Amino acid sequence: MAAPADLHTLAGAHTLLQQGLGELTHGRGLTIDLGGCGEIGANGAAALLSLQHTAGERQLRFELHGLSPAQLDELRHLPAPQMHGEGFEHELSLYLYLGSIAEEVGEQCVDFLSLMADTVYWSAQRLLQRGPWRRGQFVREAIAIGNEGLPIIAVVSLLVGLVTAFQAADQLRQFGASIFIANLVGLGVLREMGPLITAILIAGRSGSAMAAELGTMAVEEEIDALRVMGIDPVPYLVVPKAFATVVGVPALTMLANLFGVLGGFVIAVGYLDLAPDAFFAQLGGALAPWDLLTGMIKSVLFAAVIVSVGCHFGLRLRGGAEDVGRAATNAVVASLFLIILVDGVYVTIETIV
Amino acid sequence: MSDEALIEATDVVVEFGEHRVLNGLTLTIHAGEVVCLIGGSGSGKTTCLRAMLGLVQPASGTITVLGVDLARADEAAREQVARQMGMLFQHSALLGGLTTEENVALPLTQCGDLCPEMIRSLARTRLAQVGLGDAVTNYPRELSGGMQKRAALARAVVHEPRLLFCDEPSSGLDPATVVAIDELMLQLRDDIGAALVVVTHHPASVKRIADRVVLLRQGRVAADGSVEAVRALGDPWIDGFFSEDTAPPARGRSVAEALGLVPATQQVA
Image (cartoon, helix red, strand yellow):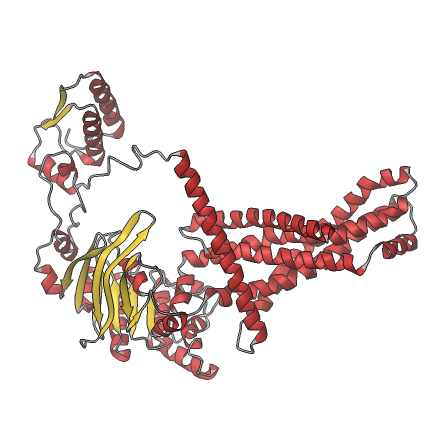
């Protein structure tokens, strides 16, 4: 053969020789005569190395005969791959695997808490000092969060209000307690559904966008460029996003509350035949200022979670373009988990206290 | 060029997980000189730059930049050093949300005592110097690769650093633009008197700009000297690098060695 053998021919020959090696007993060996061959090629070299490796494992001789000077020169210029160790024989034990996961989770937690502390510190600095900061960026981020979130939050909150009221309507009517639909929708939306729906939607839209934006900047070395210029990425990039989210999410929560209650009102009037005045009178009696305030406190906590998680996964990113998508997905999953966790902890503390 | 040492790296070891990238690197960079770092892929060139910039922390060894030990310095001292360094990144790393002028002005905003008008004037002057006087309001995405490199170079030198690092300034550029970038780097070096540390794979660039060539191999310095001196060493990799038309021989062990056809050779240190 003047040219290297094609992959299929080579694979066939390799399989036959491997089978032959398998049948040989200790002390015997394989001799390949390359005298009739021309170029060996990278694939040919790989096949020879593989056979040599198998022969070595079985303690068999392996010899090459009839090599021309050109073939030898070709093999001298081909870098040899690693035939031992990782990728061939290395199997990760369960303990090492669990240990590596624990190490990764530990590092993530330390990084996350460190970023939160940095963000709080720099946010306080920006609020207390009169130094220049990126007000324009804050406004742009806040408008982006509001513009992106407003229509979807309005529609979803209205639907949730409608569905919640619908589900309860027949039950309440059976007991002649239709009027209490106002209590159910009002308390449910203001204390729980409004903040939660807003946070989930903003985590999906803006949280993932933050992770993708900062992740892309990290991949493109823009974050490193900032550090080289003596600019800390936290006050420069994260703080405007933190301010925008902490202002934007509670504002959108108010909107979600409004549309959620509107959904309940539609069912109360349209399905349960309640008078609008009666609905609002009942709603006013059922709600206390604390119900609104507790929802707002939750929304601020959720906003802090969204911005911290989104920025954490973005700034931490190492790798290439495909990792940007993974960072955005991870940011959403982690945000949703933490939002539910924070909600649960908050409600527990509120109930106990 | 003077004998003043701006960077002194001693026995630097940098590891990523179990992979040791810099393995006892010792290197000194003097004021005003142009040092080209060459070596095969994975030899530690970019990591060496990043360690000198303080972007990666060595596992052991010391790096003293402008008299400050980066590992032991406090935040204020490190910031002081950062203000005297400039970096041209391989992919320019211009901030996509800022215009060319805003990008170039960014290092000046950290100087503190410059008024916005002065910052604007300095940024525009540097942009004009690199031939981008008409592109001040353009965003990076609106510029070609060569223009982005020029803008990034303007950003790297606008605050007149004493140390300028360039990571593969010629990558992805046509030969004419490579020459233009090289000349621009030398012009700016002469203008601000900075020492240049350049990672490059272009032999023509090395011949054009280097006062000193440092060959890195397996994370340590394998050769160090003028272009003529390192070429005279007879190292096969260096010969292959400078001959331009022949590929450097295989790094590490060859297949012939692995198959036992030739005796294992010792790498030139």
